[in-house]
Length: 450
Ligand code: HEC
Image (cartoon, rainbow, N blue to C red):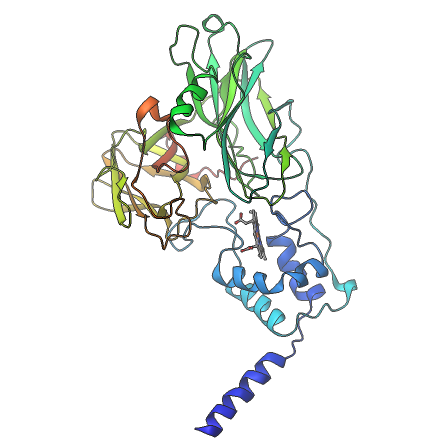
């Protein structure tokens, strides 16, 4: 027994002091620069930089944890299920190299071997915008909690215009963790002023105040009716480029009077208060959209109900499903699974009339921080008569570290006020699909953009 214990100790000792021939400059920097610095750089979306040896070395133990567990780079969708544009991941070989380098003492090596840092554009990732509009500054208090707001940005144009793409960019403090923007288009005569409403609503306000505050945004037409909305006009997640579909696909009209509504905008936790001042680049086009994109939503506020209804009792884990029959041939471009803090897994697929399955997305470990809009490399055809299914699980126990309530209380979706009563601490199960009516050859069109 004794000799075995000694032997194990010896192995452990050898393992700890094992030196590696790998160096940061030669072997590790290429991996980190390509996979981490898109966010971890000065002015990038992550809270600290990983652009040189010192910075990486200082964080090496957490880096070991988060890369081996797959938390970083962030990509919650199961890559063995389906593939999307812009996937972020390390290969097994890259993970092994990082592990060997860190456990081997993390030597720097010769700086002459360093590859150049990638070049990151400052003001736009997709081109030169025709115009840039700014949200009001938002103060994010430093209590180390996530913050969620609705923010509005009135836009006046000399004439109605067509938009090819919109791009959201946070300011250099980079506090924004996600932003979903819809465009509210007003008919010219239906609203006198688009600038007299409040520009911000804190989504954590008590429910009674919420309704009043929502009204104070003054988003309705003057007669109280609901103006036209273009959902998903612009979305943002750290490190994700704005969507620019190939010519002829997508785009929308922006009326002379419109309000861009960030619904919602999520700021990550910070220890010290800071201001955010985010902007939106707009790229116009002369031509009307040839194939404008449609959106359909399953689940909360959508076209299919949730079964059983989304009511999650305290101390319970629940499973829900939702499904929708697709009556015509469609081509899917982008999908967005959406849940809040109690969500734990999300899966969607279509069953064709012949019984075959078309996989859409699988997120085995839901993370509300990484709500990607997943774009397929090529459009996915869903034949008429197929049914799209969503299966999701929720965890309302104390063991869910994201549970906002301790002890847990009943949490449900809220459909009052057309869903406007939705706060982060309420729950949602939603699946947004952007699609086109199918045309021959769609499944061969690459969506990788221009
Ligand atoms: C898409 C942007 C993005 C990419 C790419 C990315 N990160 Fe991160 N990373 C973040 C953000 C944002 C955070 C802050 C925590 C959070 O929001 O989850 C973070 C947090 C971290 C943390 C701290 C985790 C903790 O628990 O404190 C480490 C370590 C880290 N990243 C390492 C890496 C490494 C190593 C890579 C490359 C292999 C990488 N990240 C790639 C955005 C990114």
